Image (cartoon, rainbow, N blue to C red; front, side, top):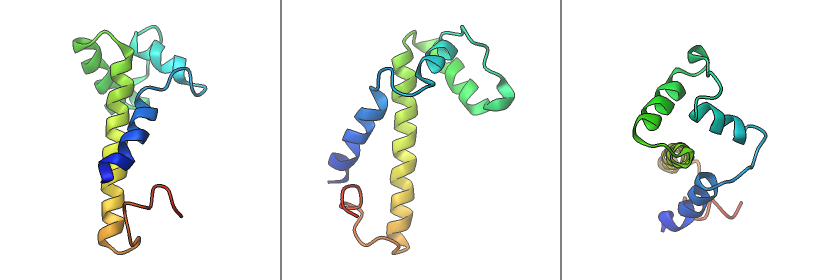
Length: 96
């Protein structure tokens, strides 16, 4: 059930196109047209270098980052659920 609620969020994050002021900057970072400073985000830099080594499509970067975000989001919701901060994790996405 949770998959049906999280999957649309993943699709929106992973397959966005031209959304946000920094969308094209991320593409240029992936294609190494912009030199990304390692000290500003070492894990992001490592992620980009590894993805670039195996894939030559910036879409993979957006899909990977979206997957990381969704996993973290789900884990945080589970922590809240276990600590009884929220009563029902399934409806927390759509109903306040």
